Image (cartoon, rainbow, N blue to C red; front, side):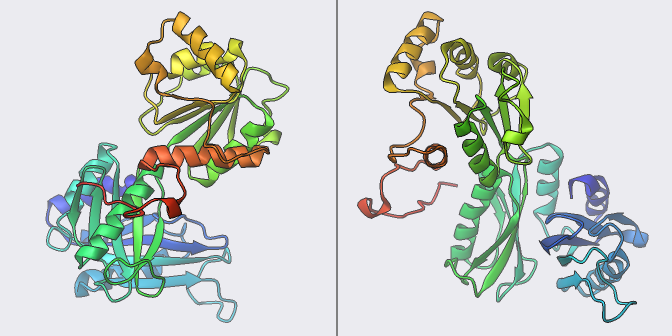
Length: 368
């Protein structure tokens, strides 16, 4: 939706209803990802695309009908070889669209959401797409606030918690709930559309452990970069597809890279000539997590060198070292799970203890 926002803002500010079609599910080789959108506004003006041209004509008519009736529609388009003239996707994939009417009366939160998206402020929009709740009912969720309702307090609470989880990763997708927010697959289906870039994971040291950490970081939704000064190790072939591989001195690369409060930094080089200048830079900049690999002796020696380089106790307290939780991990893959577990626990305030040994709510409700 980000690319068609200027037109949507213009129509919304004028109080003109428009039809908004959003891809909420895909399968196989569908041409657009969930979240892709097309809108039909006043005077039949069209912006955006949901399939690259295959079904836009049918979606145009659907949007007109939805604007006129006010009733949201959920439609699926796929490939069919039974009727050569049927509307469908030539790529053989399948897309499901939610088509709804948007106006100040239909969606009072849309203006605030659009303003946040335009200003690059993170927000997730949760919209009912199927089930007993009212289709197209929406809830806008920011890190520090909520607007709207899906129809029940329990559902709103459960969806708000999940929406913030998706927002932390910049992820978009469907979730299923009971009418009051129970974790069930057979009731209300909600589409969570996050407007935030995925957080970054910066992995320094192109060793076997780095490949495993990069793989699990990608699985968790991070945009992963692996950096090493040694070109013989920092080769794309050694890492999962989609992982950026950079040949550079780690501290120099980090100095030229933007980080924020969601960035994860994993230092796996355990070599002082790389670690110390890198951690000097890392511990003085925004990051959600900074972990460094090495034995306890390596950690103590590294901490001494960092203090000699001028870092204070507050800065050193940010360092998670030795990296990861105590899982008894041995293999690179097991160590990666240990590191990921520590990152998740730190993000959500988890203790790292077995759930069977704890009490209270498993997912404590965060204050609004």
